[in-house]
Amino acid sequence: MTNNKLQSVNQCIRDAAYDAAAVDGLSMPVIERFLRTGEETWEGAGSGLFTRTQLKQDEAYTKAVKAAIRRLLTLLGDLSRPKSERFRRCLQKRFGAVLNPW
Amino acid sequence: MCRETALRELAGRTYVLNFQGTKAALDAELTTCYLGAAWQILWVFFEDHGLKPAEIDTGCDGLSAGAFAHVRASLVDTKDPCGDVIVHEAAHLLHYLKPAAYGLQVRRGQERFVDVEFRHRELFAFACEAYSRVVLQSDRKARVSFAEKMRKDAFSFPHDPLDDVANFVLTAARARNGWQAIRKATVPPSRRRRASSKDQDVAHVLVS
Figure 1 (tube, helix red, strand yellow):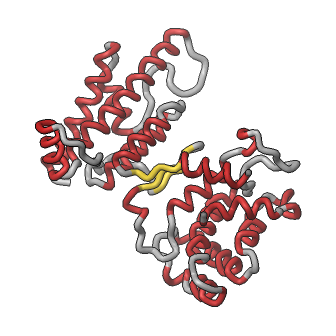
Figure 2: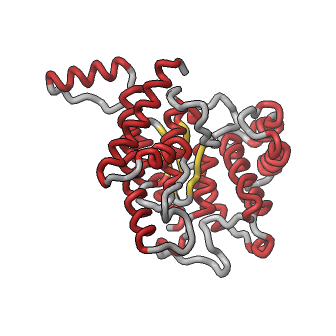
């Protein structure tokens, strides 16, 4: 992967984490870490004996990382979408033509 | 009935990871509590498009994550004459799903659509994958000849189980009912004597 592309991918990961964290005022680095490693490192994740607060935290982070995954799919999808497809989408916006999905 | 249900479930639970497939797979996985599977699917898809940073390790090509199976789109058109990753993942699903959950009658001791000894689950999936290519050959002679060449021709199979898989597939190709041969070799010991035609019916789903 070229440096430019890697930078764009990293920016997408940060953007997705930022957007998801902002909703409930959660920690962006924790969500970003999940997007990069798949590890659930927040309070209340995994199994064990948890306090009510930890369970609430887990619920909030689970909801947030789900949103982050969906957001990242869209952001990276726009990066990888073939140029012709981007052109077709542009045409669709302008002229309202119905086009095949990617 | 068992066969129709298995076929319907396989079709509904197997996702090929192009963009639309990935979106649908994520929707399905995010309804479960296993976030790790959704994370893997996301990066398996973008690895195909050269957008996965090197430090992210998904560690898989296809993915049978419990109730759903996901297949990397780049592997669907494999050049390996003995490979079919969709059949491989479908075999895992048959070993995971339970007919009782669909209100179907089960035999005593039967739990899954295809009960396979747990330690043989990969062997079973690889054998189904390769045998599904064998049965595409026109006649018995061609099937046996195809199976004999598997050890040399198959390049997408992991090295370790290749010998075992090739032996299984050759035995299956020579047998009157190859699916039954594979089933007999991988069924849990307690059920070995009872492996019946119903199992073969479900196994046939893999080439439907």
